[in-house]
Amino acid sequence: MANDAVPTLYEWIGGMPAIEKLFSRFYERVLQDDLLRDLFAEMAPDHPHRVAMFIAEVLGGPSEYSKERGGHATMFRQHVGKPITEEKRQRWVQLLLSTADEVGVPADPEFRSAMVAYLEWGSRLAVVNAALPDGVALDAATPMPKWGWGVPGGPYRP
Image (cartoon, rainbow, N blue to C red; front, side):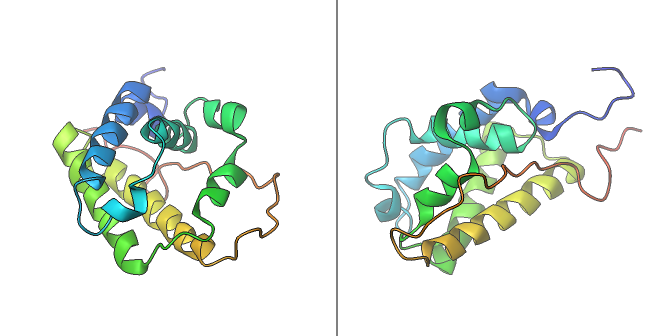
């Protein structure tokens, strides 16, 4: 990356090692959380890794999730018919952000603004998808979201 190039959010967070660390610790905490525990009690052992791959791709990293799992439609399907309430959504976001602080995810306002924007958008979409009936037809060509820095245009560099 050239000095004048704006890094992707994936690069800024620290790549896959940082994202894996975040989601590994996050899902440990989820299983200890009174509100979220039941929702995730039966998650597959590789669930944190799959979510990390998805988020990595969304933040501008490699497209491994799409290659291995089938893209955004696959993630979309994971939420259909699940008991995801607004209260659980808010707790999920809050717990993820506090875990980000715990594991040392960059805390600069530009990055956190972009990260929170995606988490709010994605988690609200999960609530909408959860309300859909099981067996609903989903478009496999639904594009993978690609999240960037948003309006500010990248990190502030004094």
